[in-house]
Amino acid sequence: MRMYDLILKKRNGGKLTKEEIDFFVNGVTDKTIEPYHTSALMMATYFQGMDEEETLNLTLAMASSGEQMDLSVIDGVKVDKHSTGGVGDKTSLAVVPIVAACGVKVAKMSGRGLGHTGGTIDKLESIKGFQTSVEPEKFFDIVNTHGLCIAGQSMNLAPADKELYALRDVTATVDDISLIASSIMSKKLASGSDCILLDVKVGSGAFMKNYEDAENLAREMVKIGNGAGRKTVAVITDMDVPLGNAIGNSIEVIEAVETLKGNGPEDFTLLTKILSAEILKMAGIENAEEKVEEAISSGKALEKLASMVSAQGGDENYIYDTSLFEKAKFTREIKAECDGFISHMNAETVGVACAKLGAGREKKGDDIDFTAGIMLSKKTGDKVSSGEVIARIYASDESRFSSAEETFLSAVEYSEEEPEKRSLIMGKII
Image (cartoon, rainbow, N blue to C red; front, side):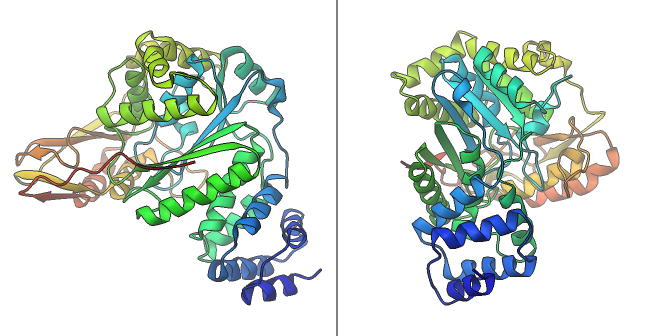
């Protein structure tokens, strides 16, 4: 079998067999295939596409290209949640403990942030002592004992995907639905959970800017998950506006904690409850909505988060007393530039402003400032007066303020008329 023949076949619109896809993925993994061959096949795939069977076979091949987590040592149904990323998206920090408080086990591997989106792992590391690097045996034990664990990827999961993504990133072949779906789902399948809930974001702060693309991606991933024998559901949610009020690292953890106490912002609280209930339904739990409400009102969800923090070496007092989090050295107020309504707040641009404060990374390995961030007091649809505070920005380096404020203000548009309200939940794929 030759890569030349696979490239030619796909270039001409042919369908790759399972054997051909396995040959390709194995060669990528053991580096016996040249990068220029890989790049050529990715470009041919970008233009010709893959059908449902090809996409599933590619995903399964990548999922089996490295280690796979065997969660059979964990009792009961195991669930996982994945978000395609957004600004202010700290839902895992609230959803995971709610689900665990309702008796469903959550074994979650998460990543770090890059660019304008924050990573769950970075946020958790703002808690004193919290360890995100957890060996598999300890990971299993924490989930069995406490019902939940959120850790960084310690195993060699889907190494072929890492190789493919690195080349796609520099050859303009990232934004292909089949390749995106297989990349995401290969890691989810290798992580071993029985049920997978996908939160697919759409809007200015999401990878998918329009609903049609988001729906296509959601459908592709659900087909892959179900085709691989995992119960998979996707919820399509709005990311045209930052989620919640807090954008950063430690301040997002604080907002998630406040939500578990029943004091979270309306949009974030609503999404947290909906996603939690969806996961419980997938796990076969009846009266899911009522159980979510009870987990929050009783304080059980907050206790679950604290127990996970303690089990992973962190100081659980940070969960019960968020004043313990380190505070930024400098704060600046950002004020409305005119009277009227905020007609749009571009979420991606707000995320870029937050990264400029030190809360994000331009490249892997960059240090981040856990205390840096943006706290919104006004969002899209809110009425404002000129000079009214619409946000506060935080940083450890005051010199970062000027550029971050300029970027933030460029994200905000005003109108005399109140804008039409977008739905937070825009679709569901099962």
